Length: 81
Image (cartoon, rainbow, N blue to C red; front, side, top):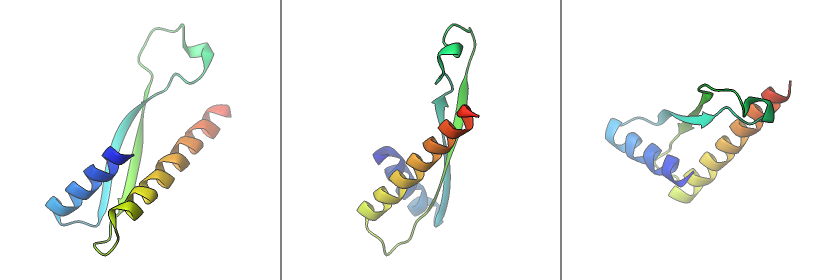
């Protein structure tokens, strides 16, 4: 989450944008029934962050943490159905 926050900050500063979207590949083998199957199981986790110039880096880090945890929860709930 620290790397994502740093990357968001750098992209925001270099591109002069406040709305940054980055994607991270994550493993799609969270269930045991997929462990013995040969193939590539990768999903992309899309992280959209609104960056304000008047907020601190710690608040951005907290915002990214909440977004990532919510996205992981949504992914886990989707796999359960």
